[in-house]
Length: 239
Image (cartoon, rainbow, N blue to C red; front, side, top):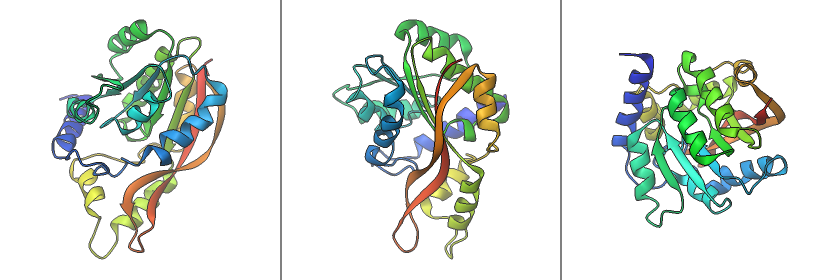
């Protein structure tokens, strides 16, 4: 079994065992805490008349928000189970959803031909991709952007690993949403901090703006405060 197949099966099993309840996935934060502030960072650099593709869309929570701001929004995920969740959550068809492995260069090129130049939203995909897949994922962003598109990429930093370790070390062990991530063999915050900008550059992407941020989670600390994972954001274009 190839690395990507193992990884795809891990995600299929994760989404198969996830209900349609909003927020059941630890990263399924409300768009007001995710896509909305991220779009505020992307908008000054982007042509908002272009479509937007949400790479690693999961159950489509952020994609549906993006569909309210763009004329066309497409959610893409490695997992067919995730895409099925997203379609069920969007009976009005505000956005489109399709299964696609971002390391499938031919499939990505076909989507790029269909959409033309497009903006890209990608939250926390590179850091938990297998090492060999990180550059192809970044190359998929470059292919989809074309000449006019701009991309927003947010990735967990190494510091978030310490936050997750602290969360997992509570008296009852990892809280349920985090335990499910570990149980399915998913690996958060697996890329070194310097690797992300290097991978973006190797893929032919230019960083137009960047800064620190924190990715809101749907899990809470014992005192009831929201878990937030340290991250870094980048706005990119084709170099």
